[in-house]
Length: 126
Image (cartoon, rainbow, N blue to C red; front, side, top):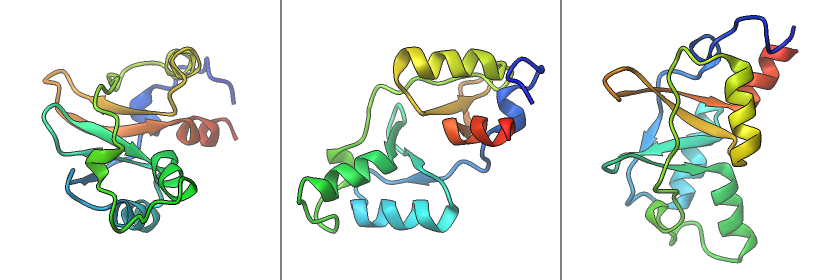
């Protein structure tokens, strides 16, 4: 399968969208990601933020206690979003050019409806 086969973000995105509070600990974020089999969470801030498995790994690698560090301490606050009708080749190019592996998906009303990741795209190709 190729990226230019007409597949859109909505065809591969993860739903329902899994969220977490900014006050949650990194340990709680890690557990939530593991339990849902995902590698990022939307943080319920206004506007929404994102925390990823890389953020979790950085906390551990830097020697911090994940039960003491809060999501708000490591989350990304300026989040790029994508519409569900974007083609996979377009999202792939965006991921490469921006160095981003996760994009929250928003509908025409800017409501968060899912998440698309590089893993979702790789799974589509296999």
